[in-house]
Image (cartoon, rainbow over all chains, first blue to last red; front, side, top):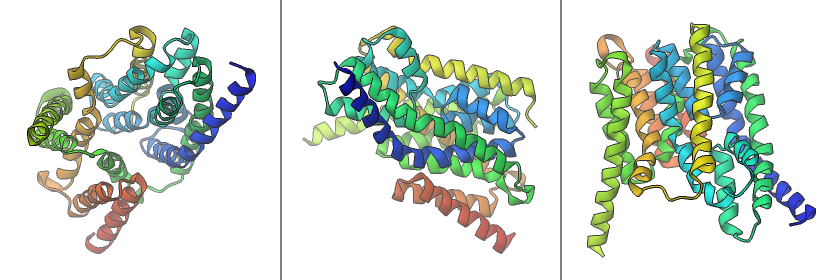
Length: 239
Length: 107
């Protein structure tokens, strides 16, 4: 490994990450806006984005805190939304597991949907990359994606503080969730998971401490996993 | 209004928790294989939890546990457009337009 290939790996990462800014930027702005609507100031919204750096989980926590749900349930639900990060971590480990631990810790912090997608795509396409090149590439993608996440959160929070209450933004967060999740319903098993979770959540609103959400989520996950097995078996029989 | 103590507990707790989810496999597990049944369940966490979070807000959005027509229709349109377009922004804009149009028309 040489300095020049390291450098080009960094810039390749910056380039590959740049388009994601058009997704992450407005998304961060929406978070800042809704955070302001929920009564957070720009500094608190920014702290949220820097410390947590995970869009869907931030939206989840924001919604539940406004419903005065117990803190424990807020944390458990938002972390459940973030379980996919553990999957990303597992899938990227074979490529960068040999890097020094401080580098892995940094990469772990910056592991979000966009950096993961870029990195795993590049690592699979170029299996001869060295571990340092992979880390440098990852740093490049993070440089493009993550500062934008912080900056646009603040922009959104400042704009949101100016918006009058008459705009009925109470429903913006639910709509954002639906817009976020419906493109992810790629397979019949994903749809089964969502439908079961919806039905259970509607019946479970009387369960104390807002535990209904977690119960519904677990039912949905189990249903999705079982549906996946069922569809696979059916496909195999068809062949 | 969210109390300060709650807000900061959630920010710090969620930050630490998310970091450990991210670092877990890279840091501790190394490149050992994860059991297939676990991966199979993890795949469906987001598509189960988020609809479960939103469904009661949408369905019980009106009076006496009934849906509010404008909000309910906006939600349906958002999902339909999201499923077809596969795009977050197309979906949320379609939903917002529907919501404001219906709020304007039927109040």
